[in-house]
Image (cartoon, rainbow over all chains, first blue to last red):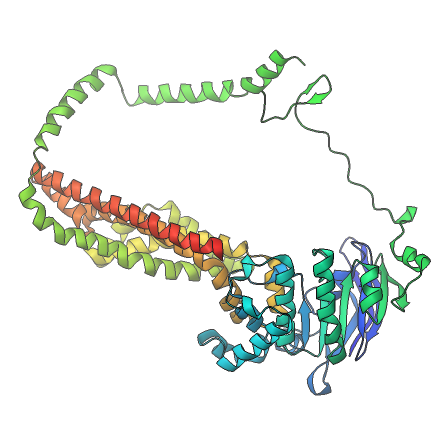
Length: 276
Length: 264
């Protein structure tokens, strides 16, 4: 179980990025966060796994043997123990490009094995077999020996999911897992994620309301750092508008228009490096 | 603005720096008493001296093989040792691995070292270890660390922070992240730069030989001092072959490493 209470993130200059985010993710749930770019979806996830420190509030995560970790305050070995139970699925491009696909999957187990052994010896045959099983689940077993950098975006995303499965976590976090994929691949990734939720809950951030309506069990709507919707994934147009519509007062000041550099000839700009 | 104005603005910009450069060159030539008459007499003198070097004393060739091997061995031992030390310095010099004070001191030490030519390092080391290949090896190792360490540090800092975050999120320790993110990501770059440094070390090794590290460079100075110019020609030829072959070999291996990298 993952409980986020009053999570708030303020920048030193006073800008409020997250404002009192409160929600709980329970067993069996597939929670999708919707929100415009900059609403705070990724930041919420980063605060949950302790990659970014929160200004206020706390995240309580129930780890192995029911032990509760407050990931917003713990550090060092405690934070590592909490993290190994959270399967974070980043955009696939965050894999280690020069390791093979299989090695990237096995990296998911680093938090659970003896650090000295992993340094000197690497992984065991049994771990490799289990990692192959995880790859089979996402239909990527035949790519196991390939260098990860040679895969396509959709393939990398599958490997990222295989790594999270192999990690054997108690909950999954998926930060925009389908943001950079085409519709066909997006659908395939959602179909892989959905059955995982029956084992361990998933909290994912998305940009496609149609996808969350089809696959999620619950949707959180985030807007300017506050939760404006928490309920059924089947949303009415007006509920969607409440998340995405632009109001005059939340328009960010646009960047000052930069004047093109270079001499003007009859109103046309000459490129400085190309006098011809 | 017309085209002529534009041209003036564009090319006028190089007039002032160009004039300053020209003035400095003329001043420097005047200061070192350069004149055309000296140049002319120097060339004729040079040509007559050049004749002394021919024909090469090929009979000295067999005695050059052993010193040539010493020169190659100097570079061959110093380069991998230097690369290993550079890895340690590179980790210490990377923002995403080391704390700021360590990064600053490692970078300062390496910048200081790069400011010292290998010859200066060798002359200092000779005072400590005496003449011979050992001081030469240490001088080359130190020289390699200054360059390779900086390149390794820069390569580590270019690793995608998203990759580092994502591996941190499985609960990996700092050391595990170095083993499974940093090393695989920078190893091809380190190998390629190490091959390049091997080539540089061969040149430096010839040069260091001349000031006391032994090897072919020493044979060259010895022959010159003993006025055996034919022998000096052979030594120069052997050094040329060493440098040429090491450059070809280094290019070949580097392109192999980088070709493998393109696939990876």
